[in-house]
Image (cartoon, rainbow, N blue to C red; front, side):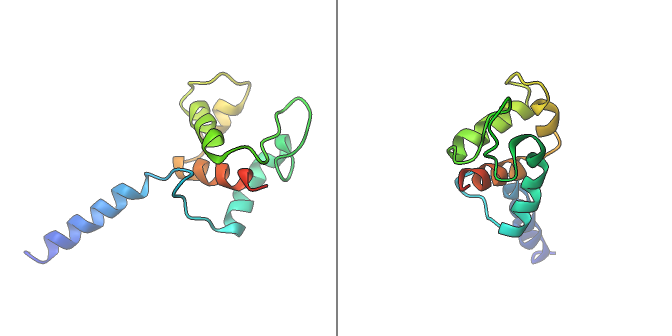
Length: 104
């Protein structure tokens, strides 16, 4: 029992820290991130650079994009549909999207 408790504690701590991703420390998987970003293509274009009624997101700073996405998710920013769309992603996924589109 003395061995199991520290191992279990470390495991739980690791799980707890896993949800603290931000654009600064997110781990990237280029294929997974491009698939994840595919959901944005309908409005923002395949690389996030579509110009028109919807703002282009390609090349914007990752921390700016992440902040905006989290504001949409938490309904702290007004939008037509982005609040509902962002609510479907985890904070980690939003951080990964921010990094992905900032690199486009």
